[in-house]
Length: 329
Image (cartoon, rainbow, N blue to C red; front, top):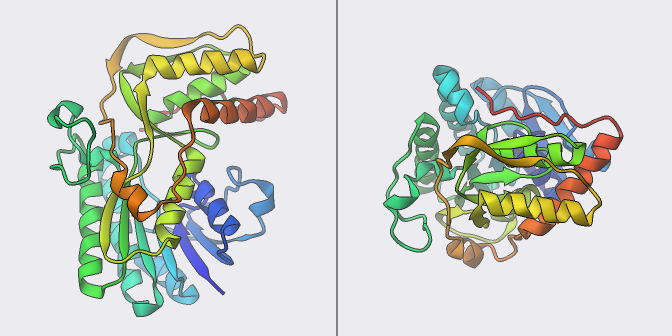
């Protein structure tokens, strides 16, 4: 029986990853998180995910979970996001650095039983867009994080590289930017999803930032991490997740257009007065990602917005939608 172990399995990205793994031949998926909240998982997957309650900052809990199931694949997603790291830096370091180290250390104990280690990185490892003169930003450009979250992701990539050098086990780090769609409800870049929720609920929303932004639909993110685990691969690699860079105004115009097609009227969405510039890099190059993992999907902005609005409208009609923006912190 094939087994995958995933940290953060009930978060936005984790839930999408779990569902993709189960839909693509993985027989046994085990997830570890501090609390059991299956609200982001579709109901048909609830009984198919084996859940372990645990904290990645507690080494013994991570070691026990991983050694007991001996997975072929480990996908490490659990982390504090940027605003939480800024508000609680010591706890952020404990989760994002020590937690990752605990997962990697447990992976060492599996030896050749482990086929792949996949770690979540971030576009936060890059500097500002103007630092990179080329048309797209490749993974071989210099690091220049703007905050602790970014530096801790650099540290995680280093742990992954060291793990591969010492064990020879294939190891992949995936850098991503703004994830949007059903299930995204926390973090500074959850604002586009908050706008979609408000549009579906008939409420007003103003984007707190503006500029060019690199978007990933949530289903593509889950599929990307799963493909990084399941697709044959040797060595160590850092890859940008496939995505689409557009201006905030274009994203809003797409919401307005798709909402009109769906009969959602009287939208009141836009950019906040005095909105700051988008602080993260865009134009992430995914050429090497496609070469290594050709089945990584790419949902168009129009389709991603449509799927999201339909889902959020259904939730609103059922009284289950919280149309709020929670940047964290």
